[in-house]
Image (cartoon, rainbow, N blue to C red):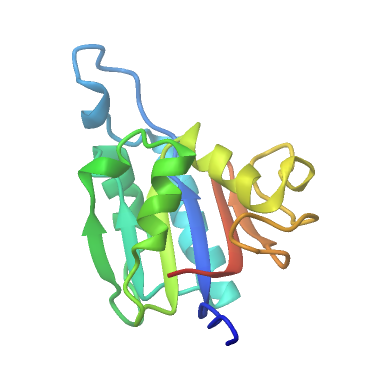
Length: 170
């Protein structure tokens, strides 16, 4: 009996835009984007539109900076399912991978908006250490745990990095 192949889906990993440290009294999860972060997130929106990247589902940490990054990506041509998940706040690569494996089968494209070091570590895990370029955008040169040999750099705008790849999930 042949094993059934998992469906290939698009995975978009997006680190939140640059956040502000101006108000030292704010808890970490309540820090907003700074002006540079807002500009970077707006540039990411344009880059995603130019590249035709539009997720069916967005999973994100519930922190203010990830939510504001998502807000800056709007408006969407087709509004994705948006799922803020408490477990994604400062999640490790292993935790992020587990969440991705639980994505609904009907979703063709998943965007994960989160934090470093977890997102960076997940990118390295998926494309290999030589595939992660100096500024956080990634270029694939290795097979991954999710068998993502065709990852490509999608865009990078200042402190925001986006990695797009086709991976089996399920």
